[in-house]
Amino acid sequence: MKILHIGKFYPPKGGVEYAMFLITEKLNEKGYNADVLTTSEKNGQIYDYKTKIYTSKKLIKYASTMISIDMISKLKSIIQNYNIIHIHQPDPMATLALFFSIYKKKNIKIVVHWHSDVIKQKHLLKLYKPLQSWLLTRADIIIGTTPVYINNSVFLKKYLTKTTFVPLGIPKPQLVYENYIELLNKYKNKKIVFSLGRLIYYKGFQYLIEAAKYLPEDIIILIGGIGPLYNDLKEIIEKNKLQNKVELLGYIDNDFIGAYYKLCDVFCLPSIEKSEAYGLVQLEAMSYGKPVIATKIKGSGVSWVNQDSVTGINVESKNEHALAKAIKEILENKDLYKKYSENSLHRYYDIGDNDKNVNEIIKIYNKLLLET
Image (cartoon, rainbow, N blue to C red; front, side, top):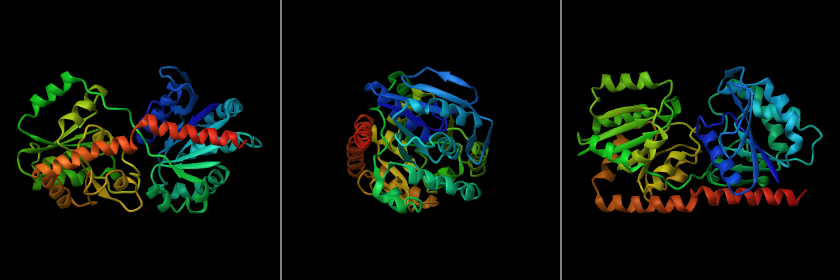
């Protein structure tokens, strides 16, 4: 069995790419031959991981899509080496490359991993929709990340008979103890609300910052991540004189991420759009036994991952008052905190174990090859 995963970036620059990274690394660890084709600033092959990576040179980025003509020729030259093509969506460039490469190759199985609908790029969608329909029609199976997202996607309605779901997973947590002690000393006597993600429009960080106005002085909000809205968010903090209650951490080194999860009392995901389809960071917090506060986004799987009143609280999106109320409710009630903390850890082991979830993907591969 030889599998080629196709996606935007490798190493990961976002949630979808990180999910692909975890799947392919685990497949190779288990002895399966899983390679990756992706775009890069440079051309060539990279061998820094368990996974063999083919990179195609990016020309430009348009509407969150990496344009790489080289990807088409590269895929054409290697596609015959694989039994299964596992393509991560949404990715118009990867779909276009596959369209031009798989003509008359009926024996190759196509797995479409549906991470999210195209949400924001409405103009691009008009051009891309026929190609997307071709891909979904050609696919042998479509994997969604939650049953909620599958059932609420207008694009998948015609294809439900060949759609299944496998939750995204993460490795078991790791902690660099020295970094944890350093942070513990820095934020002593503070209750910590932690959030992590790219500083982009659909993450809703401005509402979490505004929530700080309604929180006691002993609670501090720490937001990790980089992105185009950094200066805008910093301005909101300064305008509201919240410098002592909210801190933008910027990029967090991998050695420190586990320490922040361990340090925090509550994790918050304040996203506001369906572009947040899953919220892998919720699982990361759950793996450390942390209660989660997330938002109710119609059609998204975020509220499926974080079970309301079980692993934490799901509140109305774009509502700083609701976020503040949920934070206080959890932090001021020891019994409730203990319940959510224990249930979060159980939820991680139930849906978020990467090893178990990759085994489900392997079962899908084996079934497809038996049907050949």
